[in-house]
Structures are given as structure tokens and as C-alpha cells.
Amino acid sequence: MNFSLPDFRRKWSCRGYMSAGAAMVTVALGLTLVLTERAEARKYASPLDIFGIAAPRPRAKVHSARIPLPKPRPEEAPKASDEAPPQVEGKPSPDKPGDTRPAEAARPPEKQVSACRLALTEEIAIAPSIPDIRGPGACGGEDLVRLEAIVLPDKRKVTVKPAAILRCTMASAIADWVRKDMVPLAASLGTTISDLDNFDSFECRGRNRIAGAMLSEHGKANALDVRAIKLANGQSIGLTDRTMSRDVRERVLHSVCTRFSTVLGPGSDWYHEDHIHLDLAQRRNDYRICQWNVWDPLPQVAPLLPAERPEEAPPREVAAKPGAKEGADDEAAEKSPAPEDKTAPGKKAQSHKPATKKRR
Image (cartoon, rainbow, N blue to C red; front, side, top):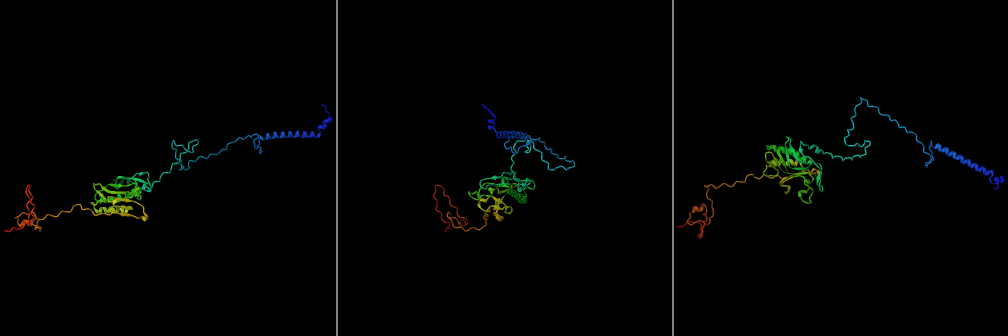
């Protein structure tokens, strides 16, 4: 291989040498800058490092902030009245940390007690509440009670036989009627009330038990059928009994027609000939129905038979009758007709002639 300076200068001119040197210097400076930037990146985050190539910046030590505690409560401060109630044992608190059990579902709000239920206390009637009834159609109702007895002002009890299932308002009306109207009526008779004869109360049916008829107030637990009121002395006030005094039945009529919106009894229809229907049906303009005819009482003693005819009475004029014997005198014929002769067995019957005076 021949090497000469002219050939070197011809191949590697000064201009090319300078270009190569400049390139090497540029590369060296670039590496220096890269190393310097990587060293600085350890202290400061690069805003252009979108791919996370630079080394992560070490985080400074986090110091927790010191929260000042509240001052202690002074001794002379009044005690708080809204203290939280003590927690029931066995019931987890939803705010307790570390409790992983789910919070209990909220209970449905309890049904509010009606004003009638609050007023119908045990001093007035023994009438425990029963659940609402939801029957077919519109049968049933809310705020129902089972009326077992009515407590009188003197603490005696009037038993309802059998117990009636009614709305609270209807049961309260029955109790007031017995306490304020029937007790004075029984006192005027010298006794008190012992039982109330319940003929019918709640029953899901149409009026008069006719299929397809309008729903009866009995189906709404808003009616009571009463047949009689029994007294402590063993007697009974039959509301439709015609042997009972008319005055007593009329007093009952006026009392029930004042308190109830519907009163049906004898004379209204043949369905209510043996009992009285009472209800609190709501009608337009507070319309009321009172249909109860208080019939006159039946005579307690049968009419007397006519007195016997005295012996000294003159004889009655009677027509001559066959059967008188021949030869009978006129007086016997005038006093009484001659009895018929009974034919003895085996003998022929004799001919009878009218009694006449025998000529001689």
C-alpha cells in the first residue's frame, strides 16, 4: 500500500477534517448535556417527560399537620340536654369505624292511632283493636275493634253477646247510646242492664242478603242489629215485642233516631220485623232514615166469654124442632126442644111429629 502526503491531502482535505471534528465536538457536548440533565432530573421533574423516561423525583418527607384540640369544658358550664341515648347492647352502630356489617333497613312508620281509638278507653268499653279487614270488593274497613262489653258509669259491664266487630266510631256510638240513654230507661223500671243482644254486626254481604245488591253497611263494619236489651232482674226489653209497653219502645225509638243515621225496624220492610238495624251511613246533606213503627201492644188477657143465662130469664122463642114425643105438653115444647130419641139397637126408629096440643 502506497501512502503519500499528496494523496492524503487529496482524500482528506482540511475542510473534511474540520467537518468531522466539528461533528465529534457536537456529539461530546450533547452527551455532556444529557448527563447533566439526568443529574438535574433527580432534583426537578422535567415538564416534557410525558413518557416517564426521566428518573422519578424523590418526594419530600411529609409531615402531618398538628390539629389543635378543643379546650376542656369548664365546670360551671350547663350540661347539654341533647345527649345521645345509650347504645343498645347487641345492636351495631352504623357510624362505628371498622363495622363492616350493613346498616339495618329502615322500619316502615307505625300506623297513627286515631282520635276515636284514644277516646274509647277501657273506662267506656272493652273493645280491643283488631287488624284492618280487606275483603272482596269494598268489604272490610280500617280502625276496627271487637266490642265485647260496655262499661257503665258505676263500673258494671254490659256484655255484648256475641262480641261485635265494628268500626271504632260505630262502637263508640253504641257505647254512648247504652250508657246515656238505656241506663236511665232501665233505672226507671227499677233495674239495670246486663246484656245487649247482638243479632248481627260485620258480615261481607249485600243489603238484605240479596245477591248483587248494593253493599250493606254490615259489610263495612258500620252497622249493628239489636234484638233485645236484657235487664239484671231477668226481664228483657224486646225492641219489637208487642207485649212490651208502648211507652218504653217509643223512648228507645226516639233515642236511636237521634244518635244514628239509619234506623230500620217493623214497618220498614219485612226483613226487619224481628230486630232493629242501626248504622252510621254517610249521606248527602246529612240525610237520615228512621223507619220503625211502634205497633200497639197485644192484649195480655183473652176476651171474656159471655155470662151464663140466668134461670129466671124468660124463655127464648124457638122454632119447633122434630124429635118431640107424642103427648108432650105445650110448656115442655116452649121451654126447650125435645131431644131426639135414641133408637135402641134392633128396634125400628119411630116417626117423629111436631109437638102439638092433643085434642080430646
